[in-house]
Each structure stands twice: as structure tokens, then as C-alpha cells.
Length: 416
Length: 65
View 1 (tube, one colour):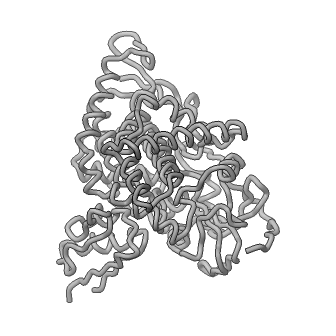
View 2 (tube, chains in turn green, blue):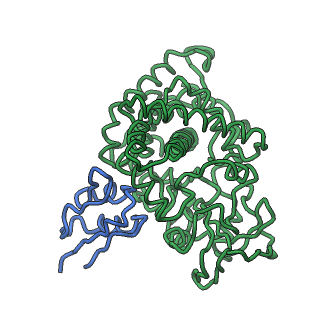
View 3 (cartoon, rainbow over the protein chains, first blue to last red):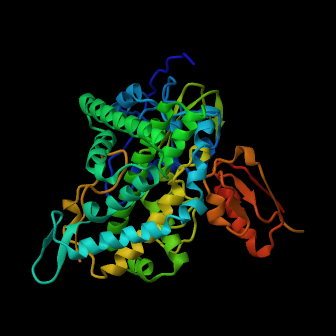
């Protein structure tokens, strides 16, 4: 498609600034009610479509007439920093359409089945116990003793980030001892305000690291995912560069998203003590429901899924032309009053997993069974260990991650 | 008239939503692809099966009632 799109008149821009750190911008709700399929100006001046209704978002995400390939004209990139990254990075399969996407994803789905991930439960539970033990033993570099017997720490560094990092490292075969290195690169890449030097530096460093690791594991396999992909290289099914692109995706996606769900989810629960009590004291079904509800209301992948139309498509009466970009605002769809009663209320007993926090369609999150089990273990374990857990600063002093590709909190000072 | 469940395994993307939603009716094989454990689930599983069809991201579950 070579037609050059002319930007359209619109007073809407995306992303929008939140009025409240716990809710998407109110304007998204208004658009959902009044202009559910509209145009929005993005960072580069282009005006892709912005869809906010649950039904429309799901419909487009499941439609093969919309492409996930960011190299196509009209694809609405998230930010300048992401465009820089796309121009330099070997793409992973989340930025491909079928059949290329299917060929690569299908090599991984056996690693992330519900049953396979369930075998990680003892490891995750033990890791949680050890991290909570360390918090309780405090104060080390991340903790300090308050007056009396109360302890304080940054929950992000002490618990929310190390838990998913340790687990994804175990699964992939990435040495956790390198976590300071890869977390720094990952942070730089997810920061939407990063300049070119920062983006390229982080990208080259992390890609080089994973290239080397993948080659090492291919020669000397261990019982981990990267080694198993190495065997596929030897079998001629994969290129070495495809292995490190997969490892890159899984490492970054595997810890940042869950870490922010733990941090922001804990903060949210602490603001709703009645809901926190249900999670702390609830049975398995209640905890499962609570995790789905937190995924729905928090939608930490808060900048919309992105697609570009391959052909003219009519969506709910609006013609989207070939080559036009589309942003699917999952964070709005998850609060659509046509789908959810009292959508802005946190109700951990809601008991539905029909949200689109993991996306929808063929690109829906591969790691969702892992994310779910980590969250189902982490929230109640934390609340049970520290019944007096509380945030020590007002919301106005908490740095929310508005400028990061994954929403959440940079730090969460807590006492317990 | 009972419920009849069929799947298009070739189009399955292994998200596992069906297994989470209706574990008595759906499973995944070792490669991650959907398997139907019970093609004619009873009334007790009916709502979960409808939910599973709804949340299947690749829309490969068909429910006839």
C-alpha cells in the first residue's frame, strides 16, 4: 500500500493524560459513549483511528485484515523511541502476520501451556517465600528500619520486580545474576522519552548479550527454553537471530508486565481494604477472580494495541481504508459499560476473565498462564505475610509510569 | 438437545484461555494445541464452555446447542 495518508482534522490526541492514576483518561470514556470510532493525532502528526468499545476492539484484533507489521505504511507507532527501536531491531513474531507469526509462535506455545506452567508452581511459591523472608529480615540496601518494630522498603525492588525476573530467568535460562544489566536495558527501552543514543545503546547491549547466550546454550544445552530453541537451530528450523529475537521478547515482556501488575495491583488493593481482605482470606476461586479483575481495571499495557488495515474494512458502520492505522484502546474497552456493570468499580468477586488486558486475536499474550499463576500466588502471599502492609507516602508522591510502555509505579514505599 | 463442541486445531494459537475457563472440557496437548476432552458436555459445564468460546482469541471453538 503506497498511498500517502493525509492527516485528518481531529481535536483528539493519543495517548491522553490521566486525571487519576488509577483510571484511563476520562476523555476515553466520553469517546466510547459518543465517538467510539474516531481519529486521534499521535506523536508523528498522523491521525490513525482510535477505537474504544469492547466489541469493536475485539473485532478488529481478531480480524486478519488488520496487520501487526510496523514496517507497513500507516502503522501507528507508539512513540518516537519505539520507531527508532523498530528501525534497528530484528522484529519478533508479535510484529509479524501469519504465516510467519504462526511458524514462530507455534514453536513456543508448548512451553507456556497451562499444564506446563503449573509445574512451575512450587518454584514460584518458594521464590515468593524467600523474597518475603528477605523483606521481613530487612533492612538491607533496599530497606530501613522505622521507629518501633515497623519495617519499610520499596516493594517494587524487594518483591514486584525480582519475582517475575527470577521466574522468567529460570524458564529461559538467563542467569539471574545479570538482572541489574538486563533490567537497566529493559527500562531504557520501555521509556517512551528515551533518545536515540539510549535506545540504540540498550538495544545493542541486550541483543548482543542474548546472541551470545543463545550461542552458548546451543553449544552446551541446559534444561531451559533458550537451549531448546538452540536445538531447533541445529535442526534447521530456526535462524540464530530468530532465537535471540524470541529471547529478547520473552525476557522483557516476561518481567516488566507482571512486575507492574504486582506493584500497581498491591497499591490498588491497599486503597481498597475490603477488597484486599477478600484476596488475603479468599479461596482459590476468589483469588483467581481477583487477578482477572485487577488485570481488567489496571490494563498495564496502557497505550493501545496497534494495527494497520490491509484492505478496506467496515467496522460497525465506519469504513477503515487500506493503509490506515488503527489503535485499539484496550484500557478503555476493559471499562466499557456495555460490557461491565459499574466498570470503574474494583470488584474482585466479579468472576469473569473476558477482559482484553492480554490482547485478543492471534497475538494474544503467550505468557498469560505464567502471569496469572505468578499473580495468583503473589498477592495473597504478600497480604498474608504482612497483614499491616501499608503505603508510607501519599499518591501525590508516588511516581506513576505514564511515560513507560508498561504502566505501573516506579517505586512503592511500604511499611509492614 | 445437548451441546456439541468442535475446534479448529490448525488455527489454535495455544493461549490456554479455554483450559483456564472450562478445564473439564478443554485441554492442551504437549505442543500447546487445544484438545477437547468432552465433545458433548453436560448442563453443568455449559456456561463455562460458552465462556471459553467467547474468550478464545483465535475463535477456533464452535458450540452448537
